[in-house]
Amino acid sequence: MKKIILLLLLASPIMAQDFIPLYSAGIPNDKGIANKQTAVKGADGIERISKVTIPTYRFFPAPNAKEARACVVICPGGGYRILASSHEGYDIAAKFNEIGVSALVLYYRLPADSAQIEKKYAPLQDAQSAIALVRKNAVKWNVDPAKVGIMGFSAGGHLAATASTHFNKDYTGIQAGANLRPDFSILLYPVISVRPFGHGGSSQSLLGKNPTEEELVLFSNEEQVNTQTPKAFIVHASDDNAVPLKNSLLYAERLTANKVPVDLHVYAKGGHGFGLNNKTTSGDLWFDRLITWMKANQLL
Image (cartoon, rainbow, N blue to C red):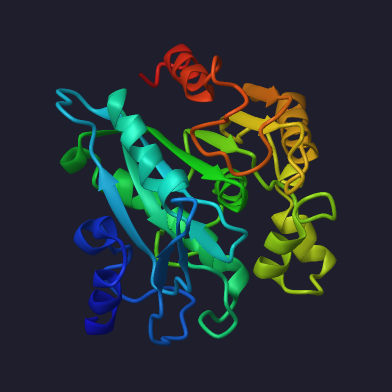
């Protein structure tokens, strides 16, 4: 624990002050290696966290909430190699707080053979545990347990989609009886599939260089959609050269085929990784569209 605290203190001020371990007891699927988490702020102003082997979180409560509010579990992206913790993490949480929605930013474990027994399950275990944590603390945190959603960017979008399609099984082994199903999902330029049209770097980080067909089926979330998959709000740019638009199109198609409501917003430009600010659409902010969607779905 001393090593964890020291490393957090060496990271960003927000991490040092407010992020706490996700698990109060043992971490499932963990080899027990020393935590070597590091945070670096690039010249572009984006904070990137690497080597996350001990998952942590920060809860951002909706200010001045007099009744239970919706809550969004936020999963930053980074190809399952790093976490873009600022513009796809706590910046997003602050935006939700502005509209009266609580948020939990999750620093999920990055898959590593050296750190986990089966690395492919580690991020999903953490996402499921975060959803369970929010509902467990619903009264304390003033959260409506029927309005707990999950959001992800890029590879974090893959994690959010995985949590949205794999909730019938407790992959943690410690959440027996907990409701692990998100009530809604918000996906920004998400990796949906680990098939070739997905994102090779994310797939390799999660499954290794030679995944089996069983693994490809399990983690290609478009193949896991059914009538119980949560409704979704999706944003993608058609000129995204990192994660092809096909990921979002196919997920939306499968949701529609299963009569699951989906809002899909495709911008002509924007590329990949734009976070809140797609600089090519200054007159049309996707977060404003999200507010409209949340109101229509009684989440605000």
